[in-house]
Image (cartoon, rainbow, N blue to C red; front, side, top):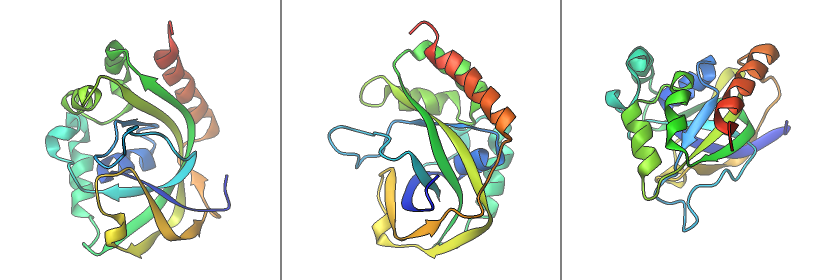
Length: 191
């Protein structure tokens, strides 16, 4: 793990919360509008989670994640602050082009079928499945919002790096390893 990092990955706050709680260990991504001609790529193997509120609606998540969404909306930071507390290590990146595997992943994330389907079919069929290990700081870091962070893009850089000292994994090694094994079986079967 890096000793400090200035790179952050923008994701819906409700998904960040699911990752932080250990409910989810994967990120389903197509990319933002400003990803460039090549589209989204996992450009960094470690990064901070940057929670956003854009585009997350109640029909964006599963029924059992509605309560989590309401909790996230209730404790949303003031408009001029961003709260950072979770750090991610990428374990694997699979570019999924077999739509039939999406239903087998549904138990491992909180996005609604409608949302996953829309992401999968956006522009051209396919989706990145990013398997991750999530770590958490004991206290959150608050930073001022900035126009530098704006826009529909996945990656942002902080003006200064934040130290990773004090992070602890949200899942035990055993639970994390078992989950990664199960996800890889689904994603790599008959490839």
